[in-house]
Length: 192
Image (cartoon, rainbow, N blue to C red; front, side, top):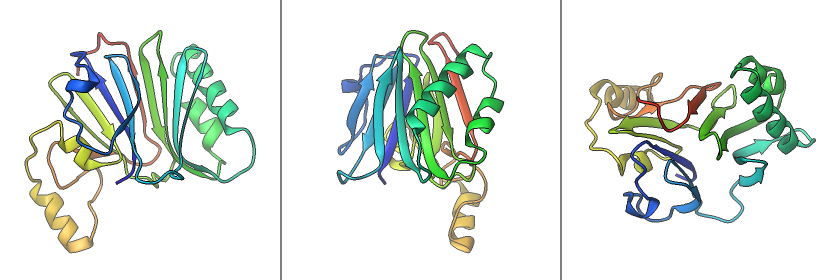
């Protein structure tokens, strides 16, 4: 599945030593955070740019016209200054016609903000293990880092309904994030 991947690595394992598989291209790596993309075709909607000390990665579409990059940059600055208030996201995206996953990495503060659109139109998965937090649109990317065990109720839901219910996936170690999820990680000293 195409999309963005984020590995937050408390152990500071170099990207070259991570078990990432093929078809993944690196956007950024500083030992604490590695951001990559799995893009099978050139016109897939992933953009990245830098402004100040931040790297911005956006997967998806904003259907309304306007400078969404400036809005995202302004939001990241306000979020950082305003004691990490999630209500700022609501003010920006409550009436926005968009489907997205946005990653903001402040390279000086080593803080990561990840959020998706209210409906969660792009599936996004996460798992943690041994000092590593993994976020990806592709469960097989997450799978490359962990030894997975089947989730019986996840498999039963998939067979009965054709999709997983709630946060459940086919594996106990991988969780699907709902729409409107905000994840913030501040600094490499955190323990999870």
